[in-house]
Length: 69
Image 1 (cartoon, rainbow, N blue to C red):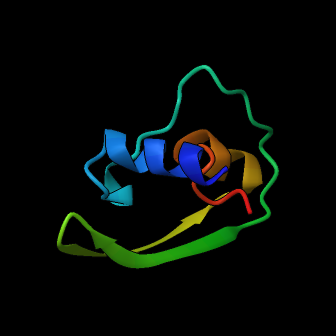
Image 2: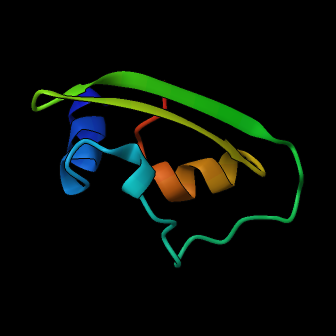
Protein backbone atom coordinates (compact mmCIF):
# COMPACT_ATOMS: atom_id res chain seq x y z
CA UNK A 1 0.00 0.00 0.00
CA UNK A 2 2.91 2.44 0.11
CA UNK A 3 2.34 3.35 -3.53
CA UNK A 4 -1.34 4.13 -2.83
CA UNK A 5 -0.38 6.30 0.16
CA UNK A 6 2.15 8.17 -1.99
CA UNK A 7 -0.48 8.68 -4.71
CA UNK A 8 -2.83 10.11 -2.08
CA UNK A 9 -0.17 12.58 -0.94
CA UNK A 10 0.80 13.42 -4.52
CA UNK A 11 -2.73 14.75 -5.13
CA UNK A 12 -2.27 17.33 -2.35
CA UNK A 13 1.38 18.19 -2.84
CA UNK A 14 2.42 16.17 0.20
CA UNK A 15 0.22 18.09 2.64
CA UNK A 16 -2.31 15.76 4.34
CA UNK A 17 -4.18 18.77 5.76
CA UNK A 18 -5.44 19.46 2.23
CA UNK A 19 -7.19 16.08 1.91
CA UNK A 20 -10.97 16.35 1.72
CA UNK A 21 -13.62 13.79 2.57
CA UNK A 22 -14.92 11.75 -0.35
CA UNK A 23 -18.67 12.50 -0.54
CA UNK A 24 -19.61 9.07 -1.94
CA UNK A 25 -18.57 7.19 1.24
CA UNK A 26 -21.33 6.39 3.74
CA UNK A 27 -20.27 6.12 7.38
CA UNK A 28 -22.29 5.33 10.49
CA UNK A 29 -22.87 7.97 13.14
CA UNK A 30 -20.83 5.90 15.61
CA UNK A 31 -18.56 8.03 17.80
CA UNK A 32 -15.30 6.18 18.36
CA UNK A 33 -12.64 8.87 17.92
CA UNK A 34 -9.41 8.10 16.12
CA UNK A 35 -6.46 10.48 16.16
CA UNK A 36 -3.71 10.20 13.55
CA UNK A 37 -0.36 11.93 13.27
CA UNK A 38 2.03 12.20 10.34
CA UNK A 39 5.37 13.97 10.33
CA UNK A 40 7.71 14.11 7.39
CA UNK A 41 9.14 15.88 4.37
CA UNK A 42 7.75 16.14 0.88
CA UNK A 43 9.75 17.73 -1.91
CA UNK A 44 11.91 19.59 0.62
CA UNK A 45 9.03 20.93 2.73
CA UNK A 46 8.35 19.76 6.28
CA UNK A 47 4.82 18.72 7.23
CA UNK A 48 3.26 17.93 10.60
CA UNK A 49 -0.33 16.67 10.57
CA UNK A 50 -2.53 15.68 13.48
CA UNK A 51 -6.28 15.19 13.17
CA UNK A 52 -9.05 13.48 15.13
CA UNK A 53 -11.86 11.80 13.22
CA UNK A 54 -15.20 10.64 14.64
CA UNK A 55 -14.46 7.01 13.68
CA UNK A 56 -12.29 4.86 11.40
CA UNK A 57 -14.74 5.14 8.51
CA UNK A 58 -14.47 8.95 8.59
CA UNK A 59 -10.68 8.63 8.76
CA UNK A 60 -10.50 6.48 5.63
CA UNK A 61 -13.18 8.51 3.82
CA UNK A 62 -10.88 11.52 4.18
CA UNK A 63 -7.36 10.10 4.02
CA UNK A 64 -7.88 7.09 1.75
CA UNK A 65 -5.04 4.59 2.18
CA UNK A 66 -2.68 7.02 3.87
CA UNK A 67 -3.16 5.56 7.37
CA UNK A 68 -4.00 1.96 6.42
CA UNK A 69 -1.13 0.05 7.96
